[in-house]
Image (cartoon, rainbow, N blue to C red; front, side):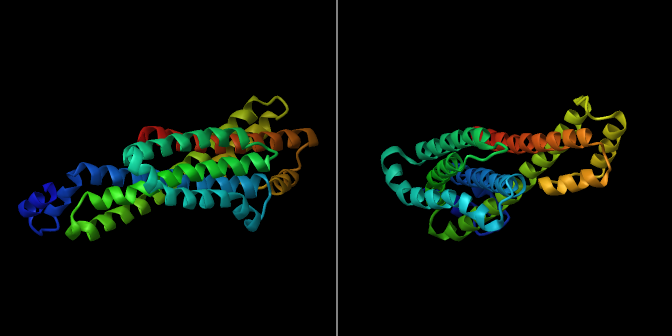
Length: 263
């Protein structure tokens, strides 16, 4: 086989064995593991922000509303091998990516100031279906691309891709969300005639020092501490809430873009 010829050529030198990444199925499987975990962990960074900060749910309520992802992902991953026997792993993974993109489009519709719980649970369940279709195939793709002697190394590469994807998802999408919050909030404040020039300047100074997601009561307390006029304080609170949703949707769009690129 190709792998046996490869082993005879490179021997057991661990530096030379990196050449096995040139095996197309192995490389493709690892790249998809990286992309899948980047999307999943990125969305898992966004959803708790929306549920806990914007909607005010506690950790238990947040977990219940994210549970459909795990349930449908588990169920679909069990059925995935049956799909692969009929359509092949590549087609199943591509269908999973399409489902993920559709779920991201659904999230853009449900991320609103007042949550529609039923719609949100359905969209999260659809996201789990897409993830389950992908993960049901990738492990077999990676392991079947090497012979038995290379299984442990392939497993190590697989875990590395998963961990790297988790780190990239949190860091990359998190940076987009926080950066989008700052830029959107500043832009909206500057365009709002109800906010004075002095307050706009002060907001800009505060944003240069950093910004984070805070709940509505925390934002109200900050406005009260600044002793702003009621109309100006209300305008700032409205713009901040709008900027939060815009930033979260920007993170979801990035996740959808990663899925499209992975296709």
